[in-house]
Length: 110
Image (cartoon, rainbow, N blue to C red; front, side, top):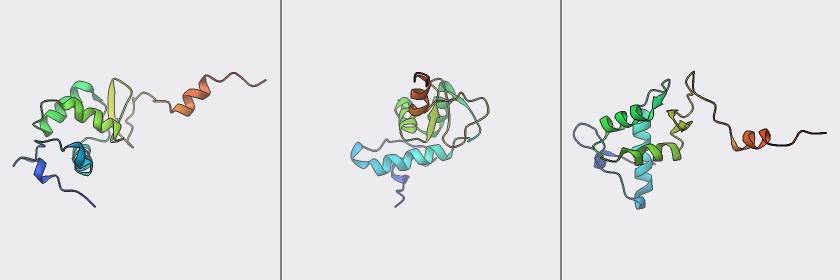
């Protein structure tokens, strides 16, 4: 079921309230709404992403949203740049999976 985020928006469509932890479905709906407005072909610096989130919300601490977008797999990051999940732009650094990272550190076969 898709949750409406209207209760968390102002008349301009900006998110004004972060739903409580008890309302995780509403949090996910807000994150999905924000991610839908990101350009899938763009690399964002942390400052650019924070500026985007500041335009889309009236919340003072957008770092919470940034972390939630990454933790919820809406965004990917290499630690300095962010991009929309599933649409890795040209120039994005490779982020190795845990399996690939482990394979890099295995001793060679004899």
